[in-house]
Image (cartoon, rainbow, N blue to C red; front, top):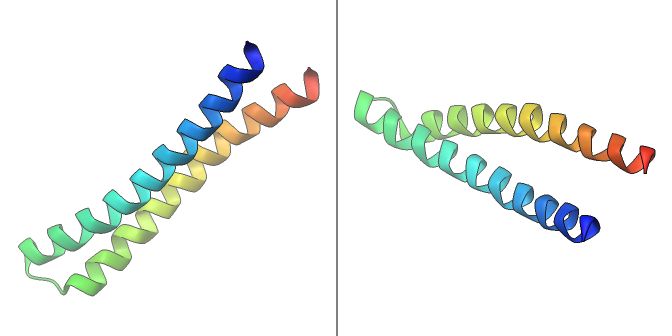
Length: 72
């Protein structure tokens, strides 16, 4: 049962990280459009921010998961 929950959490985490990346890119483009900047520049900034969030949040959780694998 524990293995099933752990695998389900990994899959859910993967989906969440992709959603964060997509939404931050789209959100950056929309915000850039509303503020009068170019869509492409704001989308790239949103993409960079999304990648930073993904690497920091996802990396932290992936480190915890891999430590759990090493201990079990």
